[in-house]
Length: 280
Image 1 (cartoon, rainbow, N blue to C red):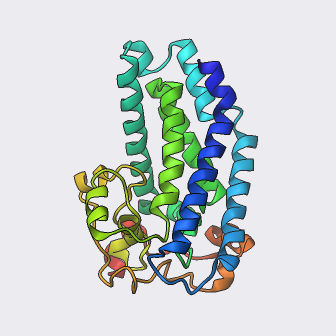
Image 2 (image 1 turned 90 degrees about the vertical axis):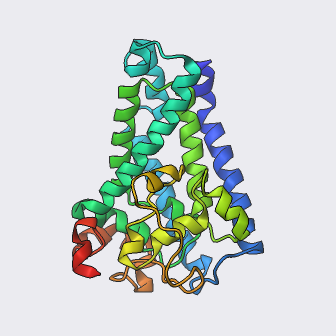
C-alpha cells in the first residue's frame, strides 16, 4: 500500500490543489468578501510564481518528500509510534493533529523572532487577501518549514497515510482560509470551531499589530483558543480593515523580484511579537 501511495502522491496532491484552487477562485468571483483595489492581474503572476519557485527549490534540496520519509521511517521501525506499536488509526489521527500543532507553533515562532519575521512578512506584505496569499511564502521560509516538518515526522514515526492527509489538508485549508469569499455569519460562527475560516484568518493579515499577532492557526482553530491568541473580528470590520504590512505599501513590492529581496532590503518590521509594546 505504501508503494502505491508514494507512486500516486504527486497526482493526489496536484488534483487536490487544482480542485480546491478552481472552486475557491470561482467562489471569490461569485461572492467576494471585500472589494479589491489591486486586481489579480497585478498580484497573481508574482504570487503563483513564488509557488512554482518554492516547489522547484524543495524538489532540488530535499531528496525525499514528507511521505517518502514517513515510509522510510516506518520501514526502519523508527519514531515514537513505531517503537510503541500504537494502533494505526490512532497513529494517523494523532499525527495529523500533532503536525498541525507544530505548524501553529512554527507560525508563532516566525512572528516572535525578528530574523524569521523578516522572511515571513513577505507573506503578510500582500496588499490584498485571496487564495493566492495562502501560497505566498519566501523560499527560505519554505525550506525551514520543511526541515521542521521532516524532523517531526521522523520523531513521531508518523504513518505515510497521515502525512499525505496532513499535506493535502494543509494545502487545501490554506487556500480556503486565505480566500476572499463571503460566508453567512451563522455558518462562519459554527465552522470556525472546527476549521480556520477566511474571516478568522483575515484578522491575522491586518496592519494593526495586536491583530497581526493573533489567529495563527492554519487548519485547526483550537490552538488559538487554547493559548489565548484568538481574536474574533478586526476592530475596523472586514470591509474597512487594511491588509498588509505598514512599512511595505508600495505596489512595486508585489513584483516577484522585490518580494524575494524584501527580507534583505528592509529594516526590522515592528510586527515581531517581542516588539509589540513598542508599536502599540
